[in-house]
Amino acid sequence: MRRWWPSLLVLGAAVGVWELAVRATATPGYLFPGPTAVGSSLFSDRGLLASAAAVTLREVVFGYALALALALGIAVILHFSAILRRAVLPLLVLSQTVPTVLLAPILAILLGYGIEPKLVVVAVVCFFPIVVNAVDGLRSIDAELVTMMRTLHGGRLAVFRRVEFPGALPAIFSGARVAAAYAAVGAVFGEWAGSSSGLGFVMLQAEPALQTARIFAAVLILSAIAVGLYALVSLAERLLVPWQEEVAHV
Amino acid sequence: METAIDVEAPAVSAASAVSLHGVRRVLGARAVLDSLDLRVPPGGRLGIVGRSGVGKSTLLSLVAGLTQPDAGLISVCGEQSASGRLSRCALMPQRDCLLPWRTALDNACLALENRGISRREARERAAPLLASLGLAGSEHLRPGRLSGGMRQRVAFLRTLLSDKQVLLLDEPFGALDAITRGELQEWLSEILVREPRTVLLVTHDIEEALLLCERVVVLAAGRVALELEVEVPRGGPRRELVTGEAFLALRSRALEALE
Image (cartoon, rainbow over all chains, first blue to last red; front, side, top):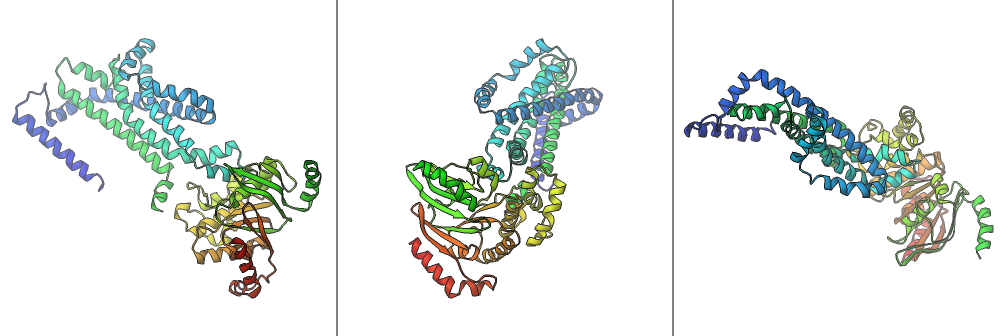
């Protein structure tokens, strides 16, 4: 907690300034709502927001899990095959130049208005940072460790299981953390392209009705989902990569 | 010439655990090793000393089958192919190369696990040995929390537990302070009495080589410049040994060859 208080202090001050500015200039709530207006929307629309958040949360979690599984699987395949790596890795980088905003409507046409196109958008957004970091992590293993394994009866599979994979975990986690921050935005893009529920849908509906406070409330919940996923991944990292801190102390 | 070597080699390797015959290894434009001949009998301990860059580590990786010579024959327990040699040699690299994510005990178990022995059984085998090396109570620490001397001991036990006939030790104590180093030298010579193996010890420390090995070769310009039989009484206190007359005489001869 002690680590966080400077950030919390700045955040609190910003919210205070925001409220004062809105009141002093008498800005109407539909143009720019103050924190109290957002807070009261959070409370009065809680039923609507909670069910929308549940939908979006599902898209985020399953889409993220899909990205993680695919990215790790593909990273391992690319690690074992130099030819595939040379063939596929540049294409993966190239695929990142296609804007997700354009991809989402196409996916909606192809996959309909259910959860599937949202999962794909979230997965596409999250896939890249994980796969690139995983491939780099697997390749940047100290060659001397591999030599040591070879003289100790270590076959190719043993080298992967006992040296390369655990050695790549810190890199995999830094990719996974970046992806966790993107996942929530991906889900909203997916919902904007065509949906009948979720936080993105709530935002779309509130906009023409000038319910700006509700949009802000939805964004706030979306941030909470992103921060929660990030915290979860960081926790998993601390549990699975406990040697990182020890090494840093040497 | 070639046929003569082919005929001679098997007879040589039958009597030697490790034999090198006319070995040449070129790195870049330079022949690091040239026409090198060496023999180590089974259970023998050969010290290899020389200045930095004289090809000591190159020699070990050739013997281990990690690289191939540009000319000449290498045989380890009768195996001449690279993969055959690799199956007989365990290399302890200069850096301890412990895996930071494994505890001391699990690092020591590595070779056992690689051979398909279950982790539980491997731990049961390694734990008493680790304790006998003075690491009782530290088994479950990861390398980041072990001292340099402890790390070297774990690395050595890991090499020993590969159950290979030939141990290739590359400057095993090079990174340690003088006191820890002396302790570990004594410790290693004790352990090699209990667990006899054929050992090739590479070091830049002549004293270390004379203490631990029965035979010491000095490498210079890619060849054996001097070969010494170490006939000094062992088993007494280390200080008496290294200040003994015979020991000092050997030491000054080796130093001369290094010049």
